[in-house]
Length: 287
Length: 341
Image 1 (tube, rainbow over the protein chains, first blue to last red):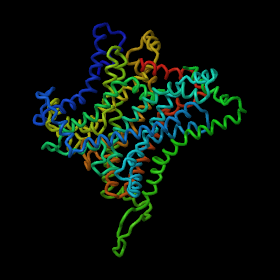
Image 2: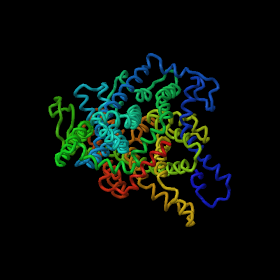
Image 3: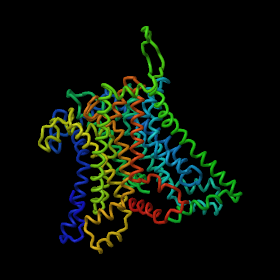
Image 4: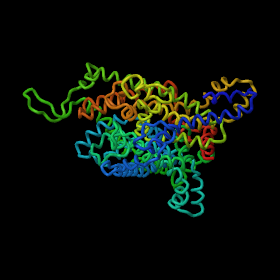
């Protein structure tokens, strides 16, 4: 970690060291981030019988852990589907509702604008459990326990503000004079919006969709509270509740394999879209 | 881009084809109301309603009880502040204060460690030109992994004969009760979120023009001086917001201790877990009281943080019409471009 400060010392007379140090630092940061993830992947590919080996690479590669995850009685396929439905619907609803609001916040001047912004941001900070407990009681009374909507609606409470915030920052940066130019050239307001603004806004909306989807996919406490039937569990809850498919106390091999399955789509999305996602994430803090 | 943001506000009133300007503002207001209402309705339903309901529920005793004659009484009974006083006394009191201190302890330690580590990471990434893309991709991986999965992953790493003990040559039973369990939670949480702080701070670092550093160098500032006098003040706004979000996030921590160490473990039980367990045993009244206390605690911390340190959460989100200096508007665009580059 000395790498952080060492190169800053402008008077250093060791050019080689100065050139190398940042890369050492980078390597440490990357190692820090990747090592535990690497361990999950490696553990997933070990044979159940040498699960507790600490070798850096499995001596015998095996996909037994993965086949254990998809045994019919585990029902993990259904959990993945549940996660997909919950996260997907949450994302779509968020975008439908949030895009309108963000457009208004970015484009229009009106009273209470700051109040709306402040309110939206504040709601995202409320502790989830404070919302879940009253909703749990309500959903119990109206028979919504073990339904998708019981997971989707509470998820909106933290994903919608996130999306509104991101989208507002993105929309702020759109060159809206292009819209006027199109209208001068004879487009109607609707046409200008459709042909100019929507294509320009698409990347921002798409990024927000990815971030919202990841947030919804990773959600745990709502899914844990609102569901007590195995068939309705989302993947994150299901993984944490795995019981031994092989006879260990806790089936870590299977859990690591399931963890890889749950995580890999996200990691692939993150790797492909990393620039966009970073732009979206930093939009919240740096504006 | 500067002109864009400043310029968008101006032509707006004149948009609706030269109507009287008074009417036009009204139209904008109505349009805004229409566009905003879906979000506000949703938030009122999923945030506003539960908060008020929790406050209400916390004053009642729910469900079934036995009356003086031993008959089952159904329905809610008003009990005033009894749920609250019950929390602070006897066994409940011990559990509550334990959870309260755990939550506060985790908040203070993780936020401090993550801030220091995050700033360090950002400086490292800022220094390196090659390999930045690679490290930025890797820094997103802890963020993308679901907390529940990362908790399992760390539980696996922290097994008695797991890799953590093998690497540092100890025989610690990390996931059993005790201080080491707290440590395990802190390590796992730090792993997942320090990179995110690093990412935000990096974006802040990239807005600092290099001339500032050159000037400092010419004036003979040492590395430490440059950091404390230039870098830190300039990234302060970004850092404060990152810290605020971390603070609020860790105050409601649930998944990590719940999955990594387990339910009903005193050493890591947070207020969220406590409230969750109350609700799980259908004691909605006390659970609502816990939820309300946690809510108030979070709100107080957020308020104190914003007041004391002056984190300007929505400051720069405000409309350009308030004649914000052009420089402030320029910065974000540059971040975006550099990040996209």
